[in-house]
Length: 560
Image 1 (spheres, one colour):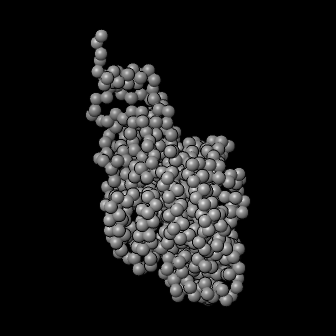
Image 2: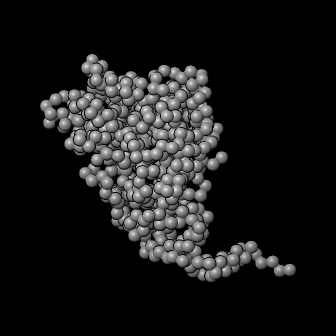
Image 3: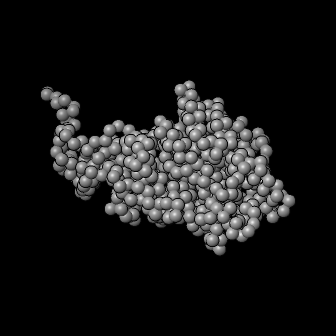
């Protein structure tokens, strides 16, 4: 019996299949930037059942032309894997807003939430009430959310069944929030955990990992997570590592002690044999101007010695957080009610002021606060909207009072819910860090407030337009790799992050010549330009520049 070579049989099967059954979608004449960092190429790309099933490169002999039930002529648009936002704060926004154009319109197809050590699972009733108040500035108070879950698995199920069972706008992976875990196990006390409390935290982390979390986050300038010492964090990281997850810390200082804080996280995770992903890895404040090379030297030495490290950044200089986060940690012990009581007491409030303005509070990264760098970006009480867009120093001058008086009043009147932009970054540091080989993109986008940071709506087109096309900090191919395959590798996703046959059809088509962030500090909710099409699971969530009604997002759970 004559046997045809296997390759010939495969080609004939492809030809027969192509003639008999058109694919769901064929994207023609695309400039494929595949996410690997390699040179782009022209190709037709076929999509079937949510997967990339065929890539016919220009000039290659691949049998008959691909046929599709639907066809899209890319007309020279770049076709890339969907972007992965490694640091997102859409924990409630995904449940609240089926449109979620803030991310979908950027080409984001997957967000990593549960960041900075504070989110909504695992919780009990007490912890849920406390965390809702603690991060009102990030996500709103949640009064419009039905908090039916208490576990990590329950939260992921809530994402999958959101909006009448249709799902969510984009995919989402979850990090177990270490601060919430500590709050659950031992409240808001600034002390070492007892053996029983540490065991409880280990169990909560292990349960969350088994239920699908991809790792654990910390906010080590936020209470109560910052009260954990290195030995406690190491033990929790051992649990994360045992379940093939990674640790994502917002570490103890981005200011006066930044290098030491980075060293601490590298040392801690190496002791625990846990992969490390450094959240919004910046070098801020005047003390760190021009010091990005010092950070990269530290990381390069650890990488050369076998450490497993990645990081994310956003392509802007100002940071964004809550005003209450600027307080010294001792002033936050006991939680929101205790903070308010201290602010109401004149003598204690004066101690807080002295610590912030003279000593340098740990909440402000050990640097004495400069009120002219603290711009109010959002308030919970609409009656305080006149404060938005002004620095504390400007508002104080208008009232003829000292800045601390203004800040204290705002904290109390807004129930600790005010968000801020902190103008303390350095452009040369931003560019130096984003070039590094382990860098990925993360928006750190807070969607609440009247004037959010423009990174929430603009991070990914800002990378493509300003930093790749205009400034040439990286090539377009390398930039796309930072936003796709690198984060997919950190998340251990075997079928995302690259345009490749068999991979999921999470795709973005953009115009390299025009893609740009529309969002600005004056108009932060403006959508980007030059991103006409976004697909998740082979379905258009953005088509011809407009958000469709498709909800193709689901939870992306860690697999054993």
